[in-house]
Length: 176
Image 1 (cartoon, rainbow, N blue to C red):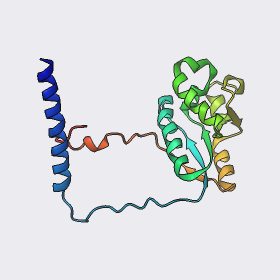
Image 2 (image 1 turned 90 degrees about the vertical axis):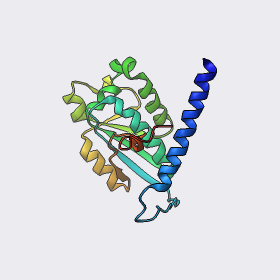
Image 3 (image 1 turned 180 degrees about the vertical axis):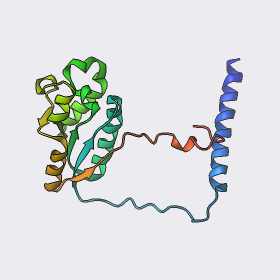
Image 4 (image 1 turned 45 degrees about the vertical axis):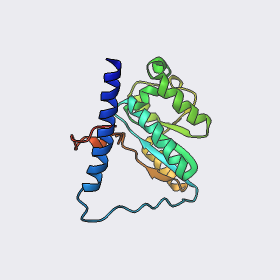
């Protein structure tokens, strides 16, 4: 039975690869194929504007920061001023430990985390409630303006993952 299951799995895998390749070649092509322009950038400093509904979205932010740093190679500042800030509270460490540990490792590598005092207080927290790698600033939006005035490029990363979106509208394609 295990042999049959293995044969079925291999058959399915080969079918998925073949149909995906055939579909891609047969796809409508009125505009030709995209060109790649993987140009190098000069080192660029960036400031992330973070206002996420759910703290879990900080996992996507972590990946955004890593991917951005690979290309920009400059300094990174993160300004947090939304509901996600509760993940930075020491009292919530156990609940959000995996992402907080990742963000703390970014801080150790030089990423600066700034938190809006107004948002923090509105959420019922004080500065000493937050982890030590966070710096509390007077207000989030002025902090964004401050970093932009110092030449940092503004990035507003909406916390939506693009992983596997190819398969959402094409039920005939299966995720390999």
